[in-house]
Picture: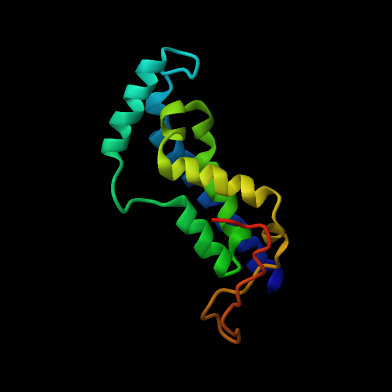
Amino acid sequence: EEAAEAAEAAEEALRCCVLAKFLGWLLFSPQWELVEGGPLGEVRAAVREAELLLPRGGFDPCALMRAAHSRGRLPLCLPWLLCYLRPLQEDPVSRALPPYRAALATLRALAGSAALLAPLQPRDGEPGDAPAAAPAAAGFAS
């Protein structure tokens, strides 16, 4: 039974990664014609325009990572979030926007953090489980 649950969780994680990758490509691909080494004024103008179009209260990758960390679910969150953010490599405009700059800085902090080694906590509300305690956050700055 545990093996079947683990297989189902892995399948669900893979589906999330595929969907996140697709959404990331859709969101970040329109700026690919602006190369990082291209005309600086053109890139800066595109960044200013994108900042105006950025939805307030939209998706916040840092808030998602903080919430996942506090619930002990970071190992489940990061794979699909990384798939979603992967196309940022090719998008100099989005990479310069505050929510994505902060997300990349948080991921860099996480890369050397003990938070990645914390054991996976059970989901809150699962039968027979006590509420998950927050894992140690040594080195994880948000």
